[in-house]
Image 1 (cartoon, one colour):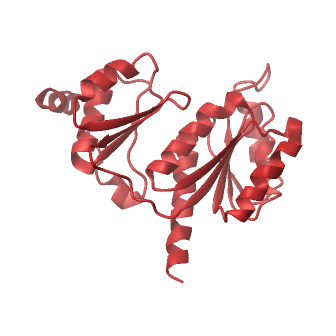
Image 2 (cartoon, helix red, strand yellow):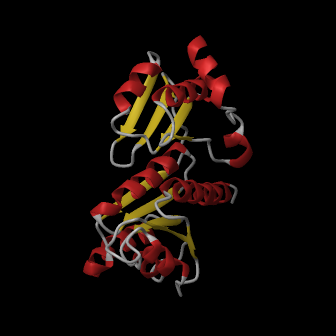
Length: 237
């Protein structure tokens, strides 16, 4: 622990109060950090708040990170979403009552969808996920829409690459906010996500909000904020 503290002092000033202040826990963006820095930050969060979250973890680093975390913690590694949740033994995230749906247009969009799902779950939400329901086979949307309406979902995160049309279609079918996540999936011009982003920003379906390309974390966190406020309002009636 002393070594971890020394590493932290050299590169980081963690915001342990963020979840109380903003409703969203601070996450360790792991993509550009060393395994030592990632493990040190997660260890500090677990010691202070009971759990830690790291996004964009390199799959080649996960074994080393887990070894550095040591005993007394539980880990949940999502290889598809490249997201790691670490919890102190005996610590559970209390459910808030918030209900969210996550829809991924194609299998290639699953990483951003899983990042959104796990993020929302760390904020206490129950998440129902649907994969490979893009507009090329639009009949596949029937079951997700039916579930969203039946289960009184408060907000939907819809992830799509290529032309990025799925969020607009979903928003035209359900009476809840939709958060669109463009992904860097596609061909040629616009194939790094710009095409999907442009489509979502130009949507004619009011009630669709758009996050940046591949930003599953931002979408999941925003969806959880909305769903959690809805849950609070419902309990106060």
